[in-house]
Image (spheres, rainbow, N blue to C red):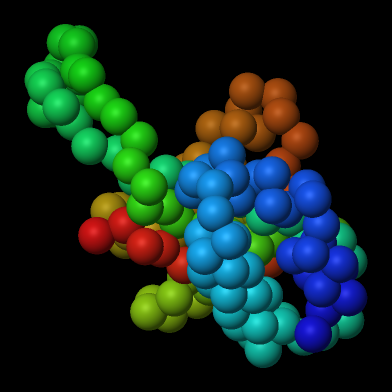
Length: 155
């Protein structure tokens, strides 16, 4: 087991983060330890056990209570986060490459030295990642490589 993860999963910082994201309770904490632990195991299986600092991210699912899709047309929408989310285990790299390994899908690799629009990739996750990195770079942000494993409980 990854030493960083072993220490973090038993820390007050992790327990506090879990309580904020998922609610309080021993069973909630144990469920999230198992869930994130499985993600770390997948990360190590895919990318190897020797690595730098791991970062963890959670993006909540949402439900639209009213005004579904009107927000796409300059309207207003009342949305709320739900207790389902997409989680990621990420490590920064220096190789100018993004590798995303999302559970249930083939891995995606993006070379950050080539961020131009490619018509053949239109509508794909690859194009979305490349396009987001390209726009961020155009806006003056430093864009760099990373490796990520992703898992989702969102329906």
